[in-house]
Image (cartoon, rainbow, N blue to C red):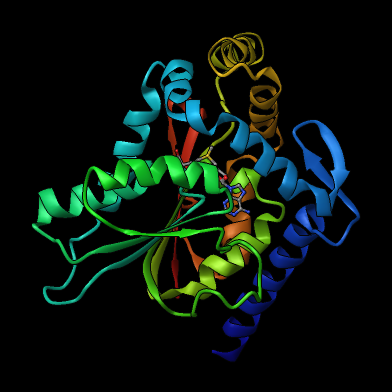
Length: 286
Ligand SMILES: C[S@@+](CC[C@H](N)C(=O)[O-])C[C@H]1O[C@@H](n2cnc3c(N)ncnc32)[C@H](O)[C@@H]1O
């Protein structure tokens, strides 16, 4: 029994060491798209990107993906099935890097429409006040939720969010922009209740070579062009495309989730969408 425990413990520790070596913030630089930048500067550079695109963010998402991002987000939320919990228990969710609120709105709508659950709450967290302001406008027209401007849930030890609080932690197209992926994962683990679910929707790696080639061509030639036409900002969309390529592939990210302490399914805990253009990773806090 203790042998099994030790083996599990040491595997987890090895994975943690590997993932911290690859994605540690201890080195003095990190990537910002294809550029190497001082670690301390990355967050401000990312803030600059999203402040610049905030007012056209939703329109650009539709234009770049022909609306497909909506299908992925619908699929993400419907599979999580929020609100389907024990009667009388209020489900608490946190949507980190929540931006303009696409995921939070879907969670609230799903819980209300599918389970008649009006008690479920979503805390929307993002470092960018301009993105949150866009979201706030949308929330005003619908139901209220807690929008937590400027509050962090991606750096360890800041103590803004109590431990063992949430039933569901979501992060969609956000984690690749964060300075330290292992730090985000360990904060996610800390704030979730035991038994709570971590769920991440992110761009990933396309396995089919033909699709990968077509997707690369589209990403690098069309998306920055659309960015300059619709958002008058080519550079930010160039960064977004590059940041996707810098994010670890499915198996590597899955190992990082495991290293943070989450239990994942035997199949690796991920599900590709559209051949791996996007991917859903889930884990459970044990
Ligand atoms: C591509 S948007 C995704 C927004 C939304 N989740 C969606 O799916 O439409 C990425 C978001 O991550 C936020 N972000 C980047 N770094 C962050 C961090 N360290 N902590 C919290 N949010 C962050 C950005 O401000 C931006 O709103």
